[in-house]
Image: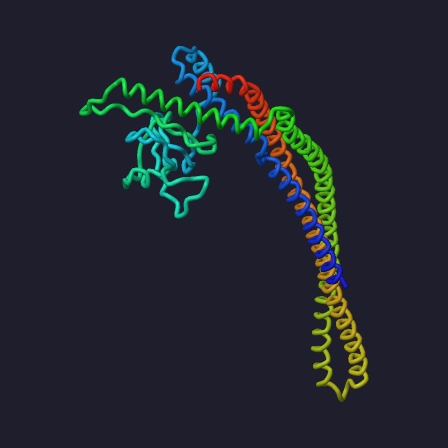
Length: 401
């Protein structure tokens, strides 16, 4: 019966632990899902990148415009991009000044080593064969070292960057006026293409409630994470109290085991001492009986009395031996039951401590994600504000075109 009770208690503890683990994993997954980037947030960041490209083209097309102050201000406020190893980038090849797909291999203070991407097996609408260096230029170059200004992350651009002008070769005699005309024609083509892209982007994105639509998902996620964090902190307090109670219960059971074992040990020692004394008496009576057997003819009556005493002593010895065996069995059973109760109490304490640690980690992760979402909401708000200024830049592009 004790074994069945222990097995039932063990199954109940496993079921309770499985339910608690499922609940904790679900809460952690909700925190992880909240860190995913929203589609409207990506659209706002793409708008910011388009705005910077428009400013760059306008400054290049209008040398007399006051672009130095704006660019310097943007350099002061915008932090330099980081290029993690293995990221997909656009890299400018010095051979023709065009941008090709590549992957970052290593980054140093002044140069970035890139690996030119191989062309895909199938060309789709999102990529073309001239975006890959080995296909467009028919060369077998694998690596190249370029400056930080000649590398752009693919995720930060909405199209292939415009090519840089190539330096004149020393052994050629190009007509400078024709080069200037070609450069102006290229800029005009670039302005028209950027203007068309800007018009299409405005039609797709819209201008009415874009900012509210962009900020609302982030604020909703932050509110949900705040509620999850508050609930997790309450559960941490409850689990801490449960852990303290389980620890106290385990300590009480240990004290009971020590007390019961000491009492059983003292009683067992007393019984063993009595049995040893009785064994000595039995040995003495047996020796005396042997002596009397030799004198059987003379001491028959005395031998009968001694035989009765021997039988009584042996019966007492058997009774004490049986009692000793019962005490051994009782001590083993009680020790096993208390050990099982101790194991269950320790399991409860360990489970409560583990859940407390998991919920504390989830609470800290929720707090970090809240700060990250606040920063992302601020960045999205700035992108939406820049979208409001795209109208004036569209008109400037139209005038330049």
